[in-house]
Length: 331
Ligand SMILES: *[C@@H]1O[C@H](CO)[C@@H](O)[C@H](O)[C@H]1NC(C)=O
Ligand SMILES: *[C@@H]1O[C@H](CO)[C@@H](O)[C@H](O)[C@H]1NC(C)=O
Ligand SMILES: *[C@@H]1O[C@H](CO)[C@@H](O)[C@H](O)[C@H]1NC(C)=O
Ligand SMILES: *[C@@H]1O[C@H](CO)[C@@H](O)[C@H](O)[C@H]1NC(C)=O
Ligand SMILES: *[C@@H]1O[C@H](CO)[C@@H](O)[C@H](O)[C@H]1NC(C)=O
Image 1 (cartoon, rainbow, N blue to C red):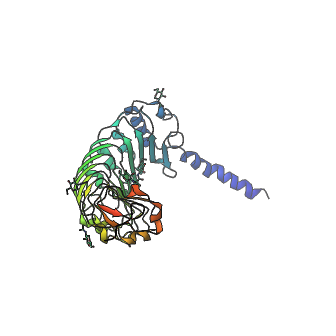
Image 2 (cartoon, helix red, strand yellow; image 1 turned 135 degrees about the vertical axis):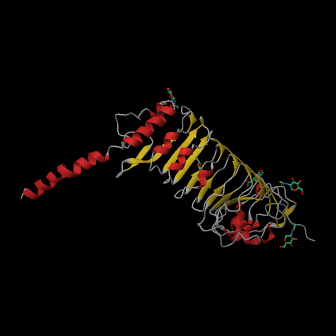
Image 3 (cartoon, protein in one colour; image 1 turned 90 degrees about the horizontal axis):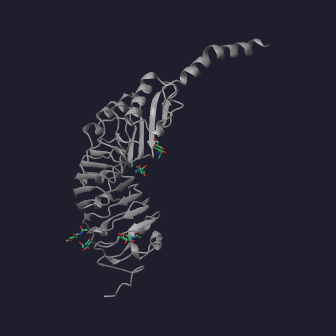
């Protein structure tokens, strides 16, 4: 009666337990790279759990590993002024590193190190609220697995590169990017990509090739873009946020058709003319609307979500009228 139980415990002790213990130990190569990173960052207090004698996969703050390979899969360092200087080259010596999250490190400086290009399995590159500077290096467009690219709130300058289609989530807002938006930015093959390049110094027109892209979110606010943007709209699109505010865009709004799922629309501070199409009322999920500071004219449509909006949504236009503004005059 005891025999099967005994033999399974015996097997457990003999084979399974050692692999469990072994699985807890991160590989020496990755540990060495992390210790180099800690050293280059000046051994800050925040990384004091990173010590040679403990397991980097289970005992080091901000580090997590692939459980079967015992190699570092993700690295998160955030919210400290104690980390200064550039991203250490040793970050490229973590062969399966797939998620990099560096957030709110105001003294993190320098360009992206070229050693990052060795991280071919990178899926998330999120470096936000730091002093990362310089142009985006050419290798930044070469990751084949990357889909989340969030470099918002840094000091990045230079042009916006033509990212490959796989990058379905691009946030480069609040930087110093200049030049125009490349026409090859998205080919339209991915579903509902997110693009946020707001608060930069982008110029020129929005490429017409973006007409075929069904954005989830598009935010180009606070740049100096000019010309048409009407092609970004469409009743069959699944876009939930369109923010084109604070540019020099110039087009006729009268024939726009709005995505049914649209929640946020900000076209304020442009040179948009024509009238507000009645079809806007069928965007039933609309919860934020700003059309102020344009050259719009005519009667403000009523009904549906439009009941929610007050005069600040329509200020400073050529001749908009009707609720919530003054009554339209009869001719
Ligand atoms: C930065 O490090 C110093 C000691 O080196 C420590 O006293 C301080 O608490 C650290 N700052 C933060 C925000 O943890
Ligand atoms: C990018 O990261 C910042 C900071 O963590 C976050 O607030 C922002 O929402 C992210 N961008 C997108 C598009 O999710
Ligand atoms: C709108 O166009 C006028 C010229 O017609 C120009 O002076 C003005 O700066 C433009 N406004 C914006 C926000 O681009
Ligand atoms: C805008 O287009 C409509 C027709 O779609 C036209 O009646 C109107 O005159 C145009 N407005 C301007 C300012 O070009
Ligand atoms: C729209 O933008 C203008 C100018 O920036 C602002 O004054 C107004 O309050 C905004 N309206 C809404 C509804 O946010």
